[in-house]
Image (cartoon, rainbow, N blue to C red; front, side):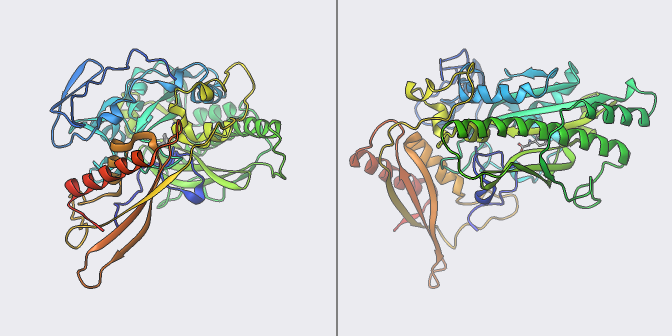
Length: 477
Ligand code: PHE
């Protein structure tokens, strides 16, 4: 194993379930732009973000390439596909308060502790998360704002849409900055004479969620003592069942809308291949901040797509937010994945494009149309093979691995930025003689904007090799 366990969050990414690694992502400079100052090397003694200075420490790992994305706020740029997608989702939750303006620097407390992440949760690792310093991170999910939003107690239902940051693979469906949307709905026990009255109200509210004729596979019980527990201390079985039913129906309604749009756009573009109606299946899941929890997968044009994560909100979390009388549900969805299938956008890097050939294709006032790819520049694949030091990465408890695949991804991004389309491990073996491990990665260089020259590719590739040697003590083969 080269990498630590990847079980972190749901895969709110852009790839199909069958290819389920972590996935996921105008353009006018905004008030946040240029606010990250970065001097010389990618890591500094202090970071200035949005006019505020943060002292760096041994946890700091935010490179300038990531800071350069800060402040684009793609999800609120009027005709941007991510904004159109956000609005489509928001439209299915009328009456919810929409928060679209929350800045991305949050405390470790907001991002992890307040949500019940255990001390050893892999999501906290420096290989997965961008740390500004030991107490501060670039949010890894919109859930970082849940407790504060509940505490403000402004509405029963809300959504939060925002840019989120994760160290991850480099490929057409993963980008270290992407966008998530969170939704939550709560009921206040104080508004009801009894638990039964509250349960009856939730069931009555369910009747006003639009009906659909979608085929839904939901083979598991609403909760399961070991796999997907009811919060017995806080909820009656009837309450949790009612909340779960309301949650599932609301989210089914949302995906019916989205996938009907996607189908219409595909058909309008002349793609009439024999298609089956969409189906939904509910899969048991785990999140520190909900229980029971589920992921929703959608069968669409031949693939099961993992679309969102959700569940009954952890009651201690609501207690921490000083709204202990509230009960309810929450979900989180990745916007890039949905936008990619709605518009047929083939590469996640395109969302960041300033190119009018991309941007001019989207119009919030018109029905969704499929993206027409413009000229594709040639790919230049190059392999990098190396021996890991000693007997390979031994990951002792509490220690960072010597080499984590995401470290290579970071070097690639730092050196070549968006000129790389993907990075895949193509070979791995252990020498029986020395016990050393050899890895070979294929880096595919391809710009979305121009044809890279052989010399440019060579320079990128050489520099990546040099950084691997200097930072991780590997021996190139
Ligand atoms: N925070 C989860 C993630 O990033 C998504 C989620 C949000 C799940 C809200 C449940 C409820 O993977």
